[in-house]
Length: 179
Image 1 (cartoon, rainbow, N blue to C red):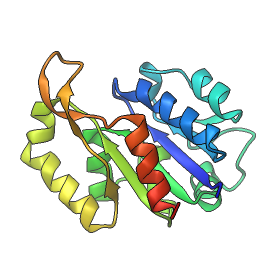
Image 2: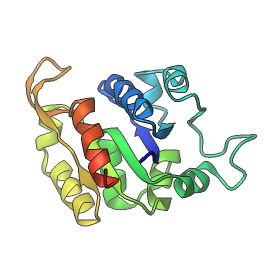
Image 3: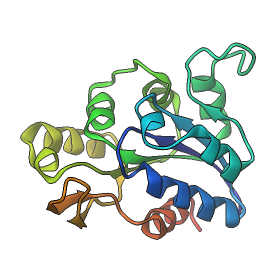
Image 4: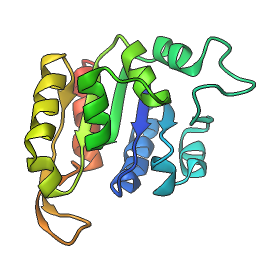
């Protein structure tokens, strides 16, 4: 059954995989809205997600002519599920600490449905005790995680930290939606 899905894109090189995820979800009949952090825009352009979704891309907490109640409220209320891919160490820390200093982190606090995060980062970062504490906290708070996987990383290392493939993330989304 088609659902409304919010995709949060953060600043990691794995953001290119999120385009394939969004395409798969749209092809499956879901309505998909994308929220990008400023760092995400350094890796992939909003035009890519506009083309794939046929919708505007939210990038600012206070857009001038849309979302009179604020995108963090309106987008949160219309969605059935929020997926953050890639989920960087930064967004994991914000989620664990309840920090809301940009559109995506504010939306995360406003959203009441299921949340799925697909972590992606360098293997040394993933192994840090602080990151593992944040992962434990978001899990305790009810956030679902898919990955990270082991494999070739953009830093030219092999190890844990690779974002799960779009097919695996889409399958987890369908599972959380009851499909």
